[in-house]
Image (cartoon, rainbow, N blue to C red; front, side, top):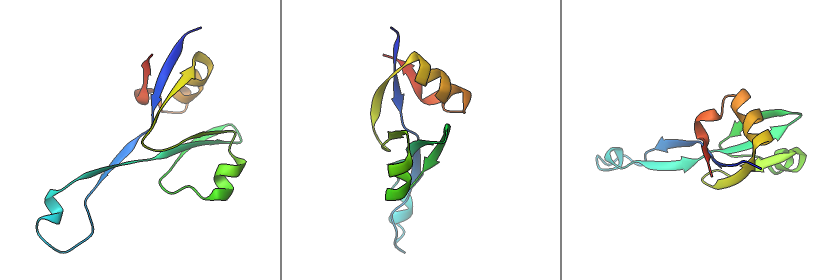
Amino acid sequence: MTQYIFTTPTVTETPMGDGPLFSRYNINKGVSVLRINGIYSSYRYPAQTDIATATEFYLGGTKTVITQETADALTAQGYGEYITPA
């Protein structure tokens, strides 16, 4: 059985503040991916109710080993660039 690694998407942010040094410092924040009703969606801050109803949940900033079937489903919904062979 072929396995893959799914790395959740990230966004780059700068810290809050007015100082000029804040704008020069970047932080990568993980974005969670949830599958609800067969549709994968990205959530910056998923609510507990969304997590509870999701059939699949990938916490932002993590890597997860997935199957070929899951890799195909994620790729079909636009997450193919985040999947690599295990």
